[in-house]
Structures are given as C-alpha cells and as structure tokens.
Figure 1 (cartoon, rainbow, N blue to C red):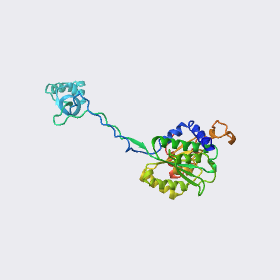
Figure 2: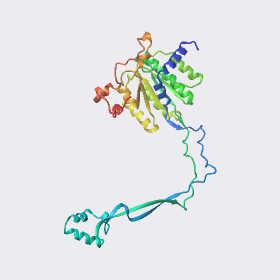
Figure 3: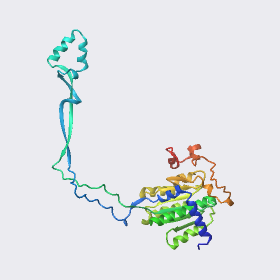
Figure 4: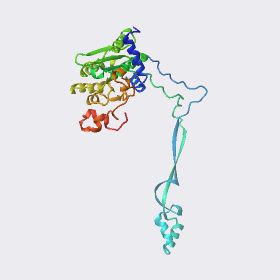
Length: 344
C-alpha cells in the first residue's frame, strides 16, 4: 500500500499543506468550543500558608465644609478669595468701593460655598475575612467535530483538486490529534455524493486513500451535501460541529435549503466556513458561508503537465469582484460579507 498511487498522492497533498500555513491554522480552529468532560477539572488554588487573609474594607466618607473642593452654593462671608465677580467689580468704582469695605467688615460679601469629601478605607468588622486565592481557572475546553464538504466536480480538476486533498489531510490530522470526529462529504453532480468518516482507524485511512486516488470530474450539486450536513448536526454526535466547504464557488443553493441552514445556525450555533479555490467569490458561496478564506495563489499548486508555472500569479487583485463592480447584484445574504471594509 505504501507504494500505491493513492499513498503517493497523499504524501504530495501533505507536502502541499506545509505551503499553506494559514489554511492549516484555519482548520485547527474549526469546531465550536465545548466543555471537555474527559479532561480533569481545573485545580482550585489553596490559600498560601503563613500569610494572613486580607481584611474586608469599607469606605467612610467625611464631608469637610468650607474646604476647597466642589462648589455647592452661594453664601455670605468675609473671604475676598471666594467672593463672586459681582462683588469684585465694586473695587473699581470710587463710590462702591466704600460699600465693598463695609460688606467685608460685616462678612456679608457674596461668596462661593465649597465642600470637600475625604474618603477613608477602614476595616469592616461586620464582613468576614476574604480568602486569598488565585483567579479561577477556566473550564477545560475541547474542539468540536468537523463536517468537511469537498467539491469534486470537473471544475475542480488540477490545482484546486490538489488543494482540496490537502485540506482533507489537514482535517484528518486535526481530528486525530485532538480525538475529534471528522466526516467527509464529497459531492459532484446529482447522485454523486460520497460520505465517509475520517478517523484514525483502518477504515478512516482507507477512505482518505480512496479520496487521494480519485480524479475530480462531473457536475456540481451542492444541494444534497448541504442537506446531509444539516441532518448530521441534528444528531448528538455532530451538534457542535462546524461545516467546512472547499470549492471554486461554482454552485447555487435553493432558498429552502438556505432557510434550513439558518435554522441550524440559530438552534445549534452552526458555522459555515468556506475555502475558495478560485479567482472570485460567487453568489452561491456568499449565500451559504459565514466566512470565506481565499487561497489566492492556488495556481501555484498546478502540475507542470496541467499548465502550472509555479509562480502562483493571480490575474485579479481581489476575490470580491462582484461586490466591487456590481454591488446591486448581491443578495441581502451575500451583502453581509461586505458591510464593513475588511482585508481578507
């Protein structure tokens, strides 16, 4: 088996994955976080010996009238430094100056009334001493399973096919390392749906090798795999799963299937991540996915016999050509990806 064509294709896909670190990191993050019942509970920090627990404190506020601070009103006083401006102008008048002196002598100048507040922290005898403990540790978390939808249509032949197989390798590797479930849903035209569980056992490895030796051909029917993924998340094993779709985006989905997908999002928190292996994001891909990762240099992974030159040159500057030049063509669902200018 190690010398078979399928095994050589798997090794080549693994080598290509090393050239796509961003894509590999994306696959590692798939699967919503959930509590790991098999992991040990977070340790509770014990109070340190030899150190007295801190005492509970309470704030005691003391008001200091006539001290510099907040202005609370107007009063009569004999303090020129606090008199109002209307009193100060009398000093410039030859007659009113005498009136000002009389008011000053009688302490009847209109002045600002101020008050300061002194805050003092004192030990509260009615509160028990607090235990000195470290911050609580978060609960052990684990990643959920992965539902991997691979487009195996004829438009994916060549470099997109190589990247799709590399994604399958990465998904199997991530699932095996963390003990997570991973289901492959390979779709082409009508009646061309293949579902396999990719695990670390012999059956999972055999399913992966079968995919590695498969040549992508046929039409594109995304309706059936989407419905299969929705049915899967209704099962207890896959309720915390994320859906990953690898395609060139040349497909569409009916409004009924999109409505069922939205219902699964609302009920189970399902997230749909797209991997675009092409030059532009299509309306079908925008309608289905919550986020899209663009493999811009996908041409670099074409074999020499397929016309690849290894440079990975992309003839477009952005995958969002429809949003840039034909924004009115986007549906309300598709437009949510471009409401805020973000660099993708």
